[in-house]
Length: 492
Image (cartoon, rainbow, N blue to C red; front, side, top):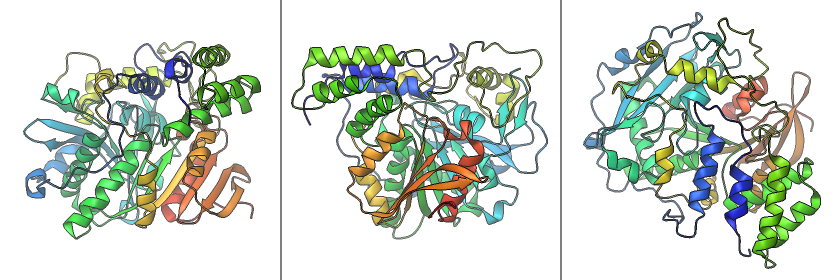
């Protein structure tokens, strides 16, 4: 690969594509800033291949007593919540006692909890909240009304298929915290994976009925790093302990950051194939930015054209409207379960900043003096490590019999399906069952391709970056088939 200038890429990729709430950032905004910092010539971020750092962890010291904690974490009812028949819990798990570092979780059991697996969900950023996005906007049991006070049911919540655990990670994200300010100067992929493993070990002590349950990890966006890295850490921990401490069965990542080179080129390919930029602009970007014909001036010029052509779009879903009026309403607007409200970020911000909501969630126990935010800036400004690719970790999971699925909302322009396809091609896998449609409700739900060795790529038709937000029914169908290990029904 030739020289790459990221001066224009970072503006094209990550800046003014999005109209985000003035009250908080979206994952895409944070990811953009992060890559801008990462690609600076003087960047101090370690980009070398990821390796777990658990060899010297003393399990007897990191696993703390959990007696009585589960009962304290039980959530009787959230403010404005409709009646439900499942149990929900929320609270803190200490992952480093000396530093005072604790991660916040929200857990929604299934109604038939004993018969279903445990599924962990992680949002990306880095530095964005799994409660704000995953739980309240995507796959959780509730969504927030336009009044910012009341909730309504998501009838396609993933706790219909699994017991779903949402984790705010790393410390400093959402409601998770540390009492050691220097932690914010040493956070990175490795610290995040290590803390997440310690969280899981302690959480399973708190909820021992899930210790031997089949366990799956899911997430989106920069969680394309978090999920495979956590799987890697678990595999090494189990091997080191010579027993199964965490019963990992599979991982699934959506519109995920996987491999920087292919992610970037794939995005411009998507722009061109969806008539957002001209074919010539795409060819210029390929030629002058990604080949031996690298030319900084011409590269920047092509990037500026792409910027101009893709401005004023929600790059999370290129066919979706922007939020033009995010003000709260006195009375809730009539919600449509299958229609995502582009202003929902504002409603969630208002709801999660209510003191009665935080008390019900057992959150914000340190009584922070500032507003809760969906994404945290300080973390990525000092992020320590972020490898250029996580492909070796996907290969490691497959080699150890861990089910690996990659899914992609096909209207996302941020980490589009073309990026995922290019990243999988870089793995040099052999196709087992070629590209074909899968069906939901008598029509195409998306497309799927499987590869020898166990990897599956699936698209979700009509879904953006946050797949469960835009196509909740199809997303639920897909996760149900992933958990069962069977491809969704479709044309042969």
